[in-house]
Amino acid sequence: MKLYVGNFIYNTTELQLRELFAAQGSVANVRIIHDQFTRQSKCFGYVKMLTKKGAEKAIETLHGKMINANCLIVKKARRI
Image (cartoon, rainbow, N blue to C red; front, side, top):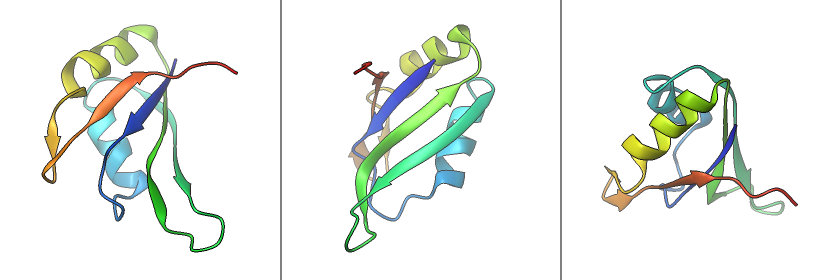
């Protein structure tokens, strides 16, 4: 299940997100979205969890959690 993760600070790394989500379940991949010109993080990204149970646990545990003085947003990613 793919999760949208937002409102983290710009210098957060994919490794940091992977470690944060790995405590909730197995992580398939992590992708932070960057500005194409400045290469600076846009402060959101996607985490793909291997199981639905792990994804639901991550949403329940991490949505609204304060990380580096920011309230993290974690929800199921929309399909386009």
